[in-house]
Length: 144
Image (cartoon, rainbow, N blue to C red):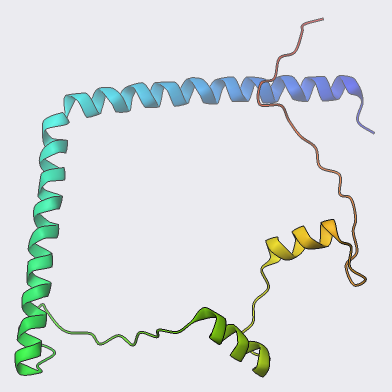
């Protein structure tokens, strides 16, 4: 059986570990901020280039689709191609009715179900209580 004194020792260890981690996180944050300030120009340039790449890629996709629509060729040039994706469009209510009728493709919304079961106990649901230890976000231990 764990004694209270052992628990207090462990609390101190956790508090110290958290302090050490917080200090390390602050050092990393400060270092990152300094690095970002020092390299602001190149970071902005890289961000600008990401936008240029995205714009150029969008243009290339548009042109590739235009060529495909004109020729039917799915690989008009090396490096670009056309992929045909099948997209389904349906009313959710109709699909759920079909799935219920056929007793397939059904999924339980566990969160909603458990909320209902907690409020209105169901015969087939067993309720138990689990013990879970909690640790305060801020740990302080008075020295004896």
